[in-house]
Structures are given as structure tokens and as C-alpha cells.
Length: 295
Image (cartoon, rainbow, N blue to C red):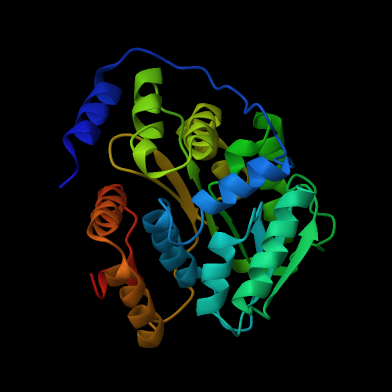
């Protein structure tokens, strides 16, 4: 059952006439070592983002296959990428990020985890010229597109995704959706302030303010990815928005068991958050096939 605060936020978003403006993040590239270190610590697999990572990991596993080459856009410190790669050792992953410091953290994390199926490349996700046309089996991006400075950059990214993705390729793009009310944005940003570093809370706030609208995603999906992916959002309010291709993988019980093990190893409050996320997306039309099997 969603918390009372979430229900209040949902009701506010339904009735408000406010239209909060999109505000670009203060730092478009996070290269300050201290900031990156704090962000990385708070955002690792067992941190406050654990339910979100597990949800997206399960979704990504549905659209990738053994033997695929998968490009992860704006991979950051590779927390999400590492989780997916560990569960899919026969899939080759390429993480792309513009930040040198983030890539350094990612490289260290990949080595620490002993992962052999990830390579890293530095570059902007708005220019993927390092990849040829229709050369990539699947593309992922998790909660990163809001880092882009404006709608034009978002459109460039969608155009590049459409260019490099193979026909019938896998796709999973997820990011925050822009909420109408500044109060709603702050409610979400500060809901876990007691569990995480202040820098991570502020980054969350800036990310929500910088999110693109559901309308923006719908426009670009129709222009560049029509027939390749469906658009989903959390129920009633687009707190999170997903573009996902059709299921490309038959149920793998070993993988489903591994996801279930991770789920049940989380503390109860994380399991509750994960259940809420699954529910809100399911009501918005997005199923969680690999989590629901053991849910």
C-alpha cells in the first residue's frame, strides 16, 4: 500500500494547475572527485536506490539476450550496469559516459566485481558515431536522460538510438518524468533524506527539476521509435517514464530465482518500495514478468 505522503502527492498532481518549469541541472558533467565519490557511495546496489535498481534490472533482462551487444547510455559509476552484467555473463555490455571521473569509478567497480563482459567508452550520448548504423542488439539507459541540457539534445539522443539499434533490437530507456508541482518535486526528493548523504538528496532534487515531460518522450518516441518501443509511465502521475521494446527472452528460471533472491535479501522497507514501484507501473501498463514470477 503506497504511503500517505505518496497518495497526497498523487492527488496534488491530479488537481494542480501549476506547471513547474524545467530547470537544467547545475553540473551537466559530474567530474568533481568528492561529489562523484559521495554520489557513488549513496547510489551503490545496496543503498537507497536498491529497489529501483532491482526493478530496472529485471526489466532490462527481458529485452536482452545471451550473445547480444548492449550499449548502456550514460552508465555513470556502473552500479546498474554491473548488476545487469553479473546476471547476464554471456552478454557483452558497452557503457558510455561523458564524465572521466565517473568512468574511473565505473572501471574500479567493474574490476572489484570481477566482471569480464563490460567495456567502457567515453563520449556524449548525443553523438554515438563510435557505433555504426544498425550495429547494436540492444540499448539501455537508466535515469540519465534528464542530465541532457535541453530538448534538442534529447532529440539528438533519440535519433542516434534509432540509427544504431538493429531492427527488432531491444530497448529499455527510463527516466524521471517532470511533475507539475514544485511541492511534489520536493516531496519526492526529500522522502529518503534521513537515509542518504545530503549531496545525493540534492542531486535527486536537481534531477527531478531537470526531468523532461511525458509529452516530450511521447513526441520523440513517435518520431524516432514508432513500432520499436512502447511508452509507459507510473500510474496517474508520470514520476517515472519508460520506453521499452517487446519481450525478447523466454522466461529463464535461474535468472528469475536470482532476482527473487535479491528481492528477498533486501530490508522490508526496500521490499515495500519495490512492491509500490511494481504496482504503480503495472497500473500504468508495464508488467514486471521476471519479478512477478516470484513476487
